[in-house]
Image (cartoon, rainbow, N blue to C red; front, side, top):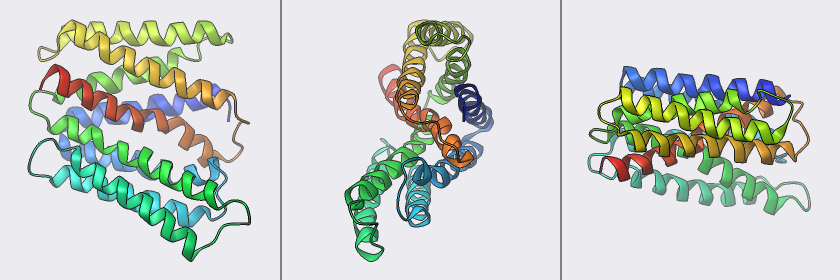
Length: 244
């Protein structure tokens, strides 16, 4: 899968988060769940796990549990419920390796890949935690929108340096502009979120650039939606700092 297709997937996933976040928490949860499932299917293939469907099951169930826990949690901070789910994913990864051994020499890699994939999927629950934080609802839309802009900007040219600068500048600019549109977010808050969105896209794009291009479409989809899931935590932290 080429960088342009991957960036398009990132932009589409971010747009889903932005649109569902605008509609409300329940819709956002469904949108985040769809992105999580896509990541769960493709991540084991992307990381070349020996037992991909076992890994997929752990990541999907763990991500879903994290999402439901954050959605139904009664007290703030809501993200603390996600931490428990991540711990359970790590334990499940170890138990699965005992029950379904990987190929010789691949045990550590498989456990690490499954645990990290579960953590990435569970990070998507942070979007719901942000949306549930009083006064931070618009921050979800802003964060996802700037992420989509940065993703498209990261593949505008064939020069990596130009694309990096474009993603950071346009992501920051989009955050600055939307900071003026949304009353609950100050302009400097929009800038900070825009920088965080641009940085997440750029850093992960650079990591993928150093790896062989995935031939399996699900592996490519997983690589495309990962920045969206990870950025959920950054947006949540921004909401805690800017809104309280």
